[in-house]
Image (tube, rainbow over the protein chains, first blue to last red):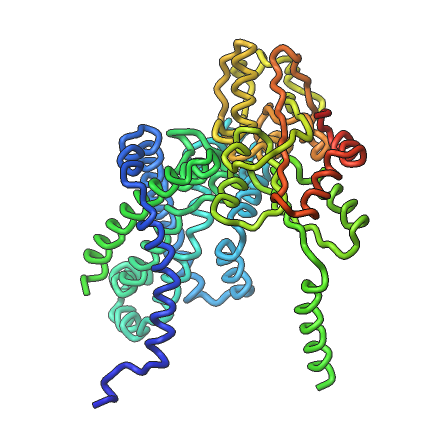
Length: 262
Length: 235
């Protein structure tokens, strides 16, 4: 009888873990200045920031999928010297303080940067202070989340299905597209959701690399931070709630569609 | 075994030592970082059993933290407006003014505020939400210049960093910021008629003799000299 009941040693820390996340969010809702939420929703600046955030985080996720899924496959399936090192380096943006990531991006893609200087001289392209710069910063920070999720998906695959397809004469790229990819679709979906959420909340690398200008580089997290700086915590709380509500709605919708509602 | 004992002893020591020393917590505006660190060292020399602990951030952030119950013994902000929200008795202890910051050698030959409106000049300003951004906007307005920056930085140090890294050709920051980044930037002064004088107020927790002593040091000859050396004007 009692064997059916979940063990307390698991339930107690689980509840504690959930509370660590829920209590601050509840405090945000409890403190919510609802008239301020309405005022912010009506303001052009907040709408510009929200639109830019949705656009850039989606673009960053698409780019992350295009380069991240193949990267995850290479890391999982291709044995090459230094693979462990490459894997570790690729996941570094997860632990790097985002502001430091932003400085690293400036040193690489800034006007005087390693690659950025060449881009500027050759094509007249500069990335800082542009929307493309925001997308780059978000991709840099969020890509590892997708790569890690998808790589563990590739590793968990039953290789016999791919072997069977190969034995039947399918070429490697064909096997990848028709057999491997559909099998890891749930991992790709989960990775993309994580990546998107991380890109949406990205602040440090974005403001350091791309700057802050309404409609061009000012994302929701930047707008929240500046509301706080201007001595208007109510405005910051209101904007945060809008961002939370939008991301929760999108993540729930994606979860239902991509992972099958459970 | 022996190593474990040593480690345990060290941990115990580390855990105990803060109790022996009293701490004085000072919340100060980001632009005061270097000057106040020097004043704090001086204070610790005078009071060997006191630890001065600083929290440097944007003035508005400091005020928000104190209003939410952060335990500060002394608060110093970069503008009087932020301080007013705290309802503490404060004294102006330093002034600061603005300068145009450009790359070393001034390759674009920027001479005055009017040049900041040029198309070939990539300009960054502090966001209007922070004091330095408000002052910069006021200076541009006083000079009748309409310049559109590429970015509104979240604090004044970020403006200097942009110019120092070469991302921006020009920015407006405090005169006191020059001493921090003197190798990577050059400053061009803004005439008094267009410049804005920022007044820095300081306040002590009422009834705290140690906090009052720190404020006295800042206002006294020695503190003023340190502030002057870091590019601040007299109060």
